Amino acid sequence: MEREGFKSRLGFILVSAGCAIGIGNVWRFPYMVGQNGGAIFVIIYLVFLAIMGIPVLTMELAVGRASKMTTMKAMKKLEKDKHHWHIYGWVAYAGSVLLMMYYTTVSGWMLAYFWKYLKGDFDSIKKEETGTIFNNLLDSPGVMMLFMALIVIFGFIVICFGVQKGLERVSKFMMIGLLLLIVVLAVNSIMIKGSGEGIEFYLLPDISKASKVGWDNVISGAMSQAFFTLSLGIGSMEIFGSYINKENTLTGESVKIVALDTFIAIMAGLIIFPACFAFDVQPDQGPSLIFVTLPQIFSDMNGGRVWGTMFFIFMVFASFSTVTAVFENLVRNLMDNLGWTRLKSIAINCVLVLVGSIPCVLGFNVWKNVSVIGSRGILDSEDFLVGNVILPVGSIIYVIFCTWKFGWGADKYLEETNTGKGMRMSKHLIPYFKYVLPVLTIIVFIRGLM
Image (cartoon, rainbow, N blue to C red; front, side, top):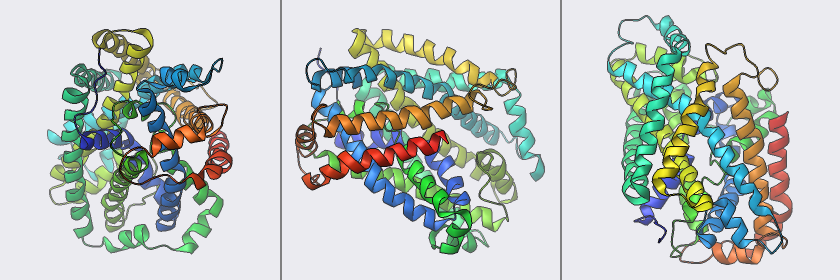
């Protein structure tokens, strides 16, 4: 049976960017900027995105396009005889499952907040009571389970229709909607009286702010954010490489994906920082920024219910685009490796993700005193394993596999990456990829463990 591919180049770009664009862009990025000195952090982040993110992304896409398979079968096809790179394919699959075991819960929070704003739950409460609404959500396992299950079930329903009629069609709609919403929200935030200080903090570099935080913290934080924003190392991008033709170079396609991903992250900051400074709210409050701080701001705005509804449907689109993209990776993995039909693979993966997500939901109420890794709860432990272990280790494997002779090899990687029209990867960068890029990735790994 012929392998289905994307209907259009735009579909590939939007689906791939949708996989990268998620909670990390519109949740983690703004508070990382807030905690690390503002504009200086943004500049350093962009530098590391260019020198780390784009190269590793081309490597994942090259492995996928050259093999037309998911990670395990791809590496088995490309590796030399009696080598065993392909074993990592099952680790990548397990990492994707683990990611969805907590990502779907957080996506469920976004959906729950969209519903609460839509029906006016925030209309009758005082500004200081927004934290109580979030705590009440966390204390309600049944409600959290419902919204998590809706995300999972609707995600796999999309995948039922295949790559073109399901994933590509829905991702196009969500990405276009996301882009429109983020522009409207950013313009509204910039127009708020008193927003100028927030714009200055976000866009005008101030070395003294970075010095106050500590340059080592700013640089390592920017390196980490640039690395993790693209979800590299678990085959989530590799799968989309297996669905595309050879008409365009992978460097050019990677730059477009990273540019769209970065645009969303930068615009998310333009929503949050002007509003925070205008309403005298600290922008470095971590995860509570989205579910406690921003609702406080919306309560002070004219038409706060409308803006809150728009913001959280934007968040649903951002998170759901990642969910459907990773679900396609899970489904195609079992199809390629076990020979299952799409519907059988969807059914097994759907049950696996639904059951696997239950501990994360219960970790905020019934099992809230349970610690898994150190003093971390269930969600934080799952996030630690994916973000600090599997992603960097997987990326190191991809880099070595694509650049060293005992892997696939730099010549074959370059040939695949540079096939087609568009921006080409220079052979003069190979020494950097072989000797420096793995070291930078190891630094991210060690900092994450620390």
